[in-house]
Structure formats: structure tokens, C-alpha cells
Length: 319
Image (cartoon, rainbow, N blue to C red):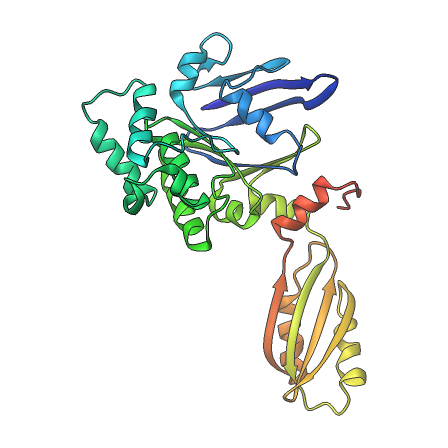
């Protein structure tokens, strides 16, 4: 196990930021660590990286305890904080050289490693520029390069794509997925589509407690509500509201049907079905039996955004 978090609790004065949380992260796993602002994500990451101590509980990183072997833990971890601290008067190469030497890297192999990070993070065009002259997106790339410069076993990335444009986000996403083949990654982000595309597993934390833990697919399945199927079909029926609508509504597991209007002789319907049911095959067979021409059929599943909303709002979760 790359990371083992046990009964972690953190108080800021009387306020409890983390409330007795425990979880494991396997070697080579990319974990999405999600939650609303103030949920305890950044506090947990700071404790794992030995930036601050917990009030109680402990963390092991690659077999090293954060209390007894803090220096060894720091060697094992590359950390990109939410507020990326950089020396703005250094240029990119100077800063990466400085960061590498802080980690004890020597001249042998240092220049080659710096070239790797410059290429991997897309910094070639700005490598000799002062960091203070760079855009927020490029500064974020510099922060990611310093987190990886010493080739750590574990990467802790707090909002790594913040400030990046869509093309840069795709590049960093691909880089994280590539790194995940050989490293353990904990990734915090508010871009849930990135979690879906990048992470093997998701933990959602709310008010200092873990409220969900599983693959994105499993969470979507566990918190799935009523299904929605959109249909577009042609029919020779004289009146769709009397000849088609009742036949759709009369199917087993159909809870409601909405008519969406006519477009170029085709009619749109939205079919709401019971939770956990998939009526696409039944709808297809009904269309064949009735002689309807089925132009479109699409099923809307519960998104990770909907799961996140259900678990992190005051509204009770309906399952």
C-alpha cells in the first residue's frame, strides 16, 4: 500500500476540519480526491506531505510514518499545492535546478532530468524566462515540473490544471495518466470531467468526513436515479398523442412520458423510467412491432457532477 491514512482528525481551534477519516491508496493508483471548498481536501493533503501535523491519527507513505520518518516521507512525495509557491525572480531553468538540489540531486544526471521535465510539462519555449513574466497556466506547469523533478514515488496534486486552457488541460491529463502507470497520484480538482477521464478511483469528502469511495462508474451506479431515454421517431399514425403516446406510457417500468414536438415529420419523446431499469431494447422492439421508424434513441445516465451534488449538499440523498 503506497499511502495508508488512519483515523485522521484535524482541528483549527474549535473547528474540526477533518473528522476521523481513514483510507488507503494502492501503488500505481490515480485517486481523485473531491469535495466542496472547505471540505478538508487541502488539509488532508498538507498532512500527508508533512506540511502540517494532524490533531490525531497518522499517515504512512511507502511504509514511512509522517511523525517518525518525516524526511523520508518528503523524499517519496512530489507536491503541487493549491497556491503554487514560486520564486518569481528566477527563470524556469534556475528554479528547477534549485528545486532539484533541495531534494539532494547532484550534477550527475541533473541536466538530463531537467530537460525531461521541461519537455514533459511543455516549458521549452519559456525555459529561460523569469517566472514572474509567465502566465498563470505556465506557472502551473512550472509547479508541476518541480513536483516531479526528483522522480518521487507519490504525487500529491492540488488543483493541477487550475488556470490552464482546454488544450493544456488535455496535455496535463495525459501526463498524469502516463505518470499513474508507475507512480501513485492523489489528484484534487473541481473539474469533474477530468476526474472521469483520469482517475481510477474517487473519494468524496464533505464537512471533514468521507461520504463516498469507489470508481467513478460505481458511484454513478450507486447513486443513479430514474433513467431518461430520448426518442425521435417517424410514424404513420394520424395522431401521435392518441396512437403513440399511450403505447409508450403503457410499457412496464415507464413512469412518465413527455412529448417534445415535431421536427421534419419526426416526433420527439422523453421517456422517464424507474431507477435501475434499461428499456432501450424494449423500446426498440415496440418500435418494430408498431412500424415506427426509430431515428434516435439515447439514454442519459447519472453524471459524476450529479453524484457530487447529491453527496455535498444539505438535501438528503435519495437512493
